[in-house]
Amino acid sequence: MEIIVKDSVEEMSKAAARMVARTLNAKPNAVLGLATGSTPLGLYKELVRMHNDEGLDFSQVTTFNLDEYVGLTQKHTQSYHYFMHENLFKHINIPPQNVYIPSGTTDNYESFCKWYEQRIVECGGIDLQILGIGSDGHIAFNEPSSSLGSRTRIKTLAKQTIDDNARFFDSAEEVPIYAITMGVGTILEAHKIILLANGKNKADAVAQSVEGPVTSLITASALQLHRDTMFILDRGAASGLKMLDYYQWIQDKMPDAP
Ligand code: F6R
Image (cartoon, rainbow, N blue to C red):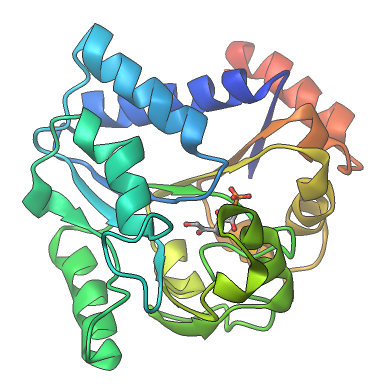
């Protein structure tokens, strides 16, 4: 695991955008795994800027989103379809047929979930997966006690996630109770993973994920088993890490490593 600490959310977002750009420069038809929520907003803004100002090209890119609320139509302003369209896709040159987001309104979730997993494999797997982290340590909507081998499926959201996400809705009662989400096992198959976190309210989840035991109670801790995962954090999110000085030391010394 590589831990990178930045002084601000802007710097965190820019560092992540540079990693995405590096992936696309090396492989213009890369497959990206994308997250929603407040954390990646700066990253998407920066990618849009790079597309406009520097010609970052998405014409051959394919994307798979992590999750979607069950029951929200694509036009619902809190659906992740709407979020992705408004914050990224409508501003870049990605072909609409290359965009995959789990359906929150299919009439057969079981076969949809199988199809989604199959499409990821048919597209060659996810080259770079972007993740946020919930205050309960979840990645995607893999809530505490999710199997670390889980695949795309329906999950019942934890009360804490519903409360955390109520800020996007008029009230907690409006937050859907179920979501369709990639599994931890699906995520662990991505070739490279970048987890972004900012703010003190994520410090405990980050510390447990990086320095705690691998446990299904903190599904992000499963990333310790992945061979190419980077956490890019702001100082608030990094503030609970016991080995922070060591991670900074590595970060400083890395450019001169043989
Ligand atoms: C969203 C997702 C979630 C969020 C997490 C953090 O696609 O997969 O795991 O990344 O709930 O959300 P924010 O960024 O809003 O704090």
